[in-house]
Image (cartoon, rainbow, N blue to C red; front, side, top):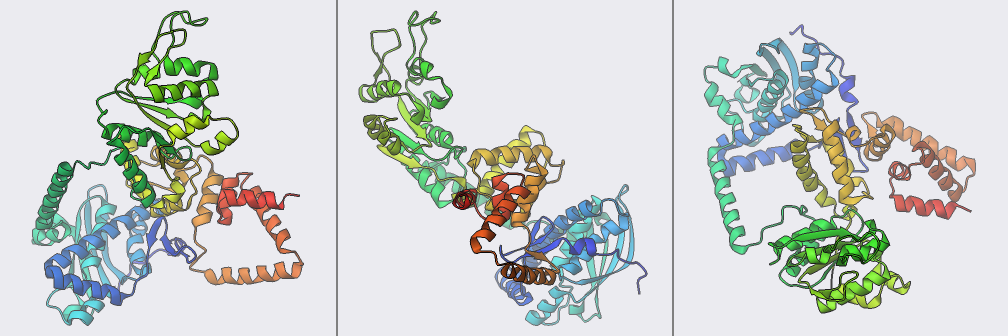
Length: 557
């Protein structure tokens, strides 16, 4: 029996959280699942029948290797200040905590600086040999393929050098237990044979390359190339993208509708790049950012001496965009005088500079955008009805990010690649818990807020590490309130929580408080604990900020 002892595992147990309300299980920042071993056995058989034993072993080994690498990253974080041996034992202990196998250390010698490693472990209650024997019976060779992949991946990532584990004894082969031995790859005589199972199949790689080439040729032939600036897979995004694509083949004036930050300018640029005007200029102007007395001169140009300070003639945005596309953002902020001139440009295709009495022909494609209700602005007299009808020929509504949850992950991946290059940072990505939290966040600032948050995360995350919740917020209180909204409804000790819940209900009922009083107290306390941050309070309560505001107003006398 081994004399090597594991450290206490309480620090690992507290990492496991069950969020039954969200349908998630967490191990630290990584999302986990519980599965029937019978289902995994069925998958094993399906793989064996379809791709054969060698390829099945390769797939399962690589899957285990990836899992081991993730657990090694976790081990370095949570036991960074413990002894080297205790830190390393995080992997075997996690393997047991995850229900994979019981691991008993027999021998362990390692030196991180020199990359030397020698380890021997006994395995008992291996789920993998159990399901293999149920599906296929006794085997002539060891069958714990994913577990060997895990041990090799975990140790390689921990030591910083490829450590190959081999299963030298296996219960499926008639042995009393499974035994594994690990050492650097070059120290194994049959290293090349076993290392091949950790590599992707060359034939599959070749097929993937051919598939990529076919897709590229098909895309080139159909000329249906997605504009690089637009990233998304949700139905709402695809619908808006399709409308823009259809409009690009015409000269129709397009009105982009949507909340601030949804990416209206990106859609406008995509429209320009897909149109026949792509060789011409793309000129963008934010109407809300210009003083009202300068808007006309900015749009239509000015002649020398037209007003005090006009010491020379200059072109306006319309002339600069001649032959291309003019994008007018926040068009609802245009003053009525400028609206009248804009309508004439759209109808006649000509402009007059300020202080000039001659007209100039312009050939532009107008794309307008707004986040206000123009129809309501017309009723209130803030926007000309004739201009509204002229602009509203081809409206395209871009949904807010909270309605495009499927787009969050591809957007995050694209932004990570861009900002990692910009800031010369090598990162592993965003943790599972952080991504899950992003999908539940209401994103009042839409894609622009996500972009700013990811850039901040790239800057704050450690080199070679993961972006976690704490890296996405400037205030610790915000991070904690957001994390509590998506955190576990309990951990391995949920029995206590249920008892607390029961006693809480008894206290509320016996207090005699009305439902309205209870709601008012709960809302007030949530806002107080979030330091007046309504978004944070809403996340704590599990509702959206508009819902919180509505309830606060309803309860205000």
